[in-house]
Length: 145
Image (cartoon, rainbow, N blue to C red):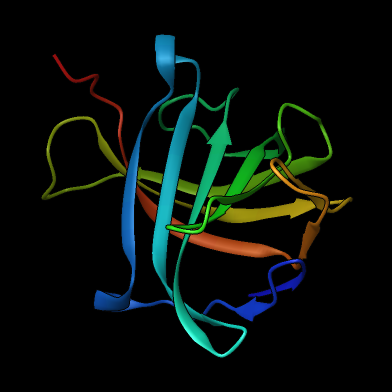
């Protein structure tokens, strides 16, 4: 996937190049997925993290055009781009299946996120546009104790 605008790079993370973590959102309102890896930004290797928030998603559910929020961070630079709570990003969750060998409550989730407007820079005047973001990861629906 490519990012355009204030943060120009191509994200092509797989295997050990990709960190992924998924969990319920606060108050168990949907799920949150975090993906992170290294990418070339302006000729330098930079850590990029993407957080996808799916506030209406339920455990085991597949759904089309569910509201989604996305935040993209260039780590260690202080740059954040986000859809905030605006409703211009949606996600299709194509699969959400319980992991046969995983912990109880752990599901593999895959889908695509798309935004109809650029993500504003939260602490600057730039923005970032992205193509359709296809993702696959795990969500541990068990709340930590």
